[in-house]
Length: 476
Image (cartoon, rainbow, N blue to C red; front, side, top):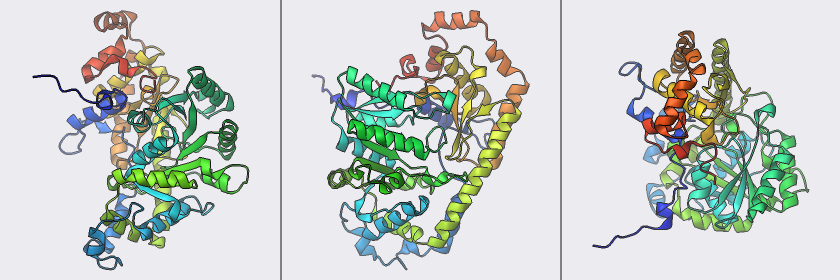
């Protein structure tokens, strides 16, 4: 019997799942922490999930328990059960537009007719990439960036990512020279650069992008005649006194920029803590983008039942105002407590102002100041301390030793257990043991596992290929 081959796409290695970012999740799934049944298990700190306001959502659902039975929704069961237009339910899009404007401080105008519903931001980013770029063309993406972009932007589209390299000396802020260097790199490879994609607030930095930097990015894009995509899924998690500035605010307040070249991706996964509901959206003032996106959204539709429920929730203006204010307060407190807990044991982190995580600097604990050292430390944190955190290499960070550590997906008690484990580890002198690991042990690992040394050993234990753990393995 002959061999039945598969498509090039099916066999491609561009998905990005062979990364320590996802390997840590698998390790957690095998041995999850539970206070009563598995207190020595792995604590999940690699998942950017918003659970700080779950109790508020549950209370709202208790008070509105008639909605799932179609009472008081202005929508009958028959209307909901039958086929819907690709646009989605008009009253839901209107409610979502209102919520997006609320999250952005009412300083932007959101037209419900220019919203395309998608099954989460993952689908939204992929659809926009399909609309803007052809296979072999490229997007500029500042580092460090969300590991899922290697899948969302590259895998099925055939589009490449050119990293805009950012560094810790200025808190990884995007600079004009970095943009120009990345752009010229693409041209030198005879690639057509079609867009800049930014995440604001940043994942993994937990920082908002300043209005000045946003303006610089828009100026650069206008000069190069390329699009700007702003992923703003964490817009509602900004907990600093400085308000969040959406790129739409700058575009709508000026005649300087072509609004048809600026597009926003949003979802309810982070701000409302509803990733399982798969509610995403593309917002664009470009009619051609909207038309093409709606056609493509037929592969990622949102159930009508979900739209009916969330239309009712988003339309409750009193609840939404209270919810947003409460999660900001809780996230600010959680961030402060986590940062202080780390500081007390000698660990520094970026001074974030948004998001569900901290960008933590563990460079002084590395075996050696390179990616092998980072992978060795990551393995120790995962296997000995019992915390799943995400190493910087999986975010394409340019400097080894940075880790994203999530605190929004757990209770304060669980966060304190995690801090207690780190403190115990540091107090026992294990950190010093890592830092002074003998060159003989490193050489032994290298001889046993090949030239990649410690990284190869970490890969072997977790079932990965060593080549998948280099600084930029997935973007090229």
